[in-house]
Image (cartoon, rainbow, N blue to C red; front, side, top):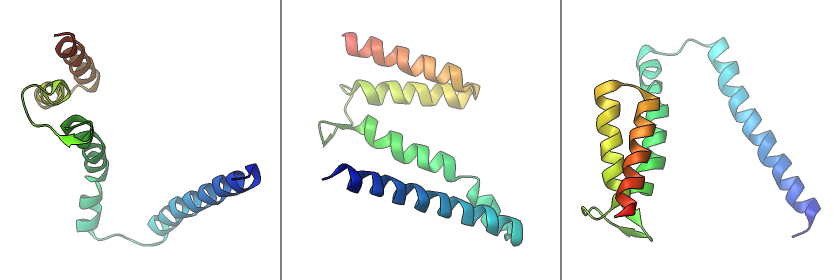
Length: 106
């Protein structure tokens, strides 16, 4: 692939992303959303985060691993417990990473 093709692709993807985001900003300013849709959209960030994190902690080398030998899964569960009890993002990250490092050392 030539550098011109790659840069053209980057620019096209950037313009597409910009237009997609602009359309939502424009539509939100112009139209009133139903309350059900507005409430549903509040859960999008956490659903996207879960969709990114869940495969990373449950799949090891492309294979589903839900055993107690999966350090990522155990650290993720520990982090989820801390997040649920404290609602503190920084503490959740610290505990999750500490658990992961400790479990990988064994």
